[in-house]
Length: 249
Image 1 (cartoon, rainbow, N blue to C red):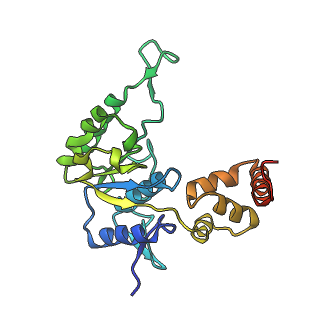
Image 2: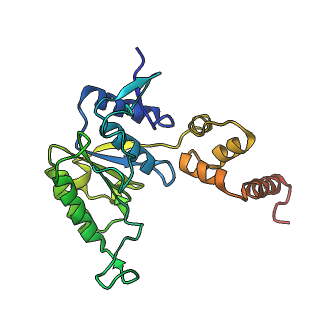
Image 3: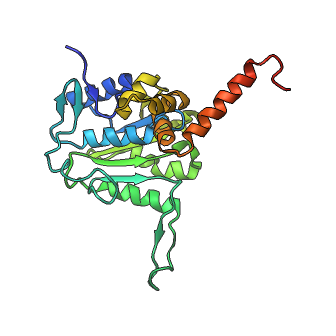
């Protein structure tokens, strides 16, 4: 019998099989670190796995293990402010709070406060899902003081909590955090897998897959770019110049 692959990991079958096995066996770790180059799909992978682990009755469909779609957790969109048991902290995004004076007087919430709020979030038992899911993006871009703010949650997590981290460069993450996480490496995917995840195989999709460098998120952004044809023509011109006898002329 072929191994199951976790839904959302079709472009990364190795990690997908490992994570599907953890869910199917009931041996999901309390913390995972998704590592890979920018645009490879770490954010999407963390959210897909969080949604799967939050399902009460994961279901197998044609070799893919995915959320059942009918349990109390699955009935809610798995998105920030839509699902009771999910929090996503992205240091690159600005958050504001409105002061008592009213709209327009808000100010940015310091990241350290957002991380402390995240600690409070995971300490509360889940409402709909079996686990409380906290997703922290871009850990390698954080200062040590910010990583230390979340370290206790990773060191001594509540039994009902799961923390999913992402990083492009694992060596920039504190060793104390690395040692307590199950590492999931997401490598660039071949074009055919990217095409499969996009569900199309036309000329524009093939060009985007080839230009993406094996990164599904980049391929999708290229597909949405109005100047994709211009970029392709520019690359063709560069190739022609490189093949010329005297390219500098």
